[in-house]
Image 1 (tube, rainbow, N blue to C red):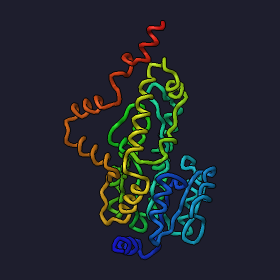
Image 2: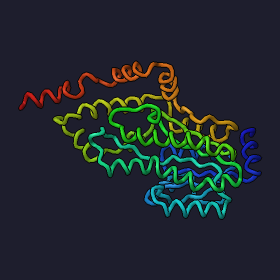
Image 3: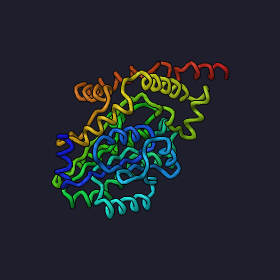
Image 4: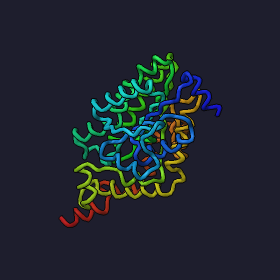
Amino acid sequence: MGRMSFLTSTAQNKTLVVLITGASTGLGLAIARAFQKYPVHLILTARQGSLKRFEQTEFSTNEHCWIEPLDITKAQEREQLIEKVNSQLGGVDVLINNAGKSYRAVVEHITEKERISQMDINFRAPMEMVRLCLPSMREKMFGHIINISSVSGMLSMPTMAVYCASKRALEGASESLWYEVKPWNIRVSIVQPGFINSEGINNILHTELSYKSKSDPNDPYFAHYKYMDSFIRKMMQGTIATSDSVARKVVKVAFSKNPPLRVPATWDAYFFYFFQRFCPRRLFHWILYQSLPKIHNWGPNSMFSKQHHESN
């Protein structure tokens, strides 16, 4: 109750308006459920084609909850939703930018169109949501922007170049934003989950070229995808972190009086935060490279590549 009383008093005793993007499944749905025990007005958004998922949940539109269609990459849908919230609820108090997607591809397998698509949903659209919400937050002298990033926002992994780039961009802009809006008592937090034991592994996308590569043992990058896919799946299935545990961390941050800018949300996020901070950079990269799954079998040393050359 101490956290809740702080928020309501800071927000001039109005019911807090919490907007969550990508809320129909996964972490977004878990965050929505974690907020249920508190007297807030939830705005849960998802693309039009995903709204039916809410029918399988406990959520429906009522006086305490709105379920709204929103493709965050479409300017008109963003603007219409925020105008509606501003006029009927007095604006968003807590914006949680959760919607996103992940392409699995090496740099050579990402076209410009795919690169722009990844940046649009993971960086450009969330920052537009921030831009639209800020005027009402400044007027109220209160607000909290929570951007869901990833461990990939602090370090990069092979076969995930463009995803890592999108999260680095989100974190860089969020850090600048932290300085810019602090005079208006607007807080900014970056939540960094690592591996989560969830169905998220099944939602990772491949580009046209990366899909062909992972399906062809004769492709130069076949081993990259083969070993990284199995490694990431193993890590996700073996971790104790879940969408629910990360969601509780998000709510704790939202209700914190002085939240930090960066919030590691899983044990591996904490580990890499301190490892990267205290390990010399050159040694850090060497250790990570040597730790990649079966790295000595990648590229020209791949048994698949050798079999290809021998057959020729």
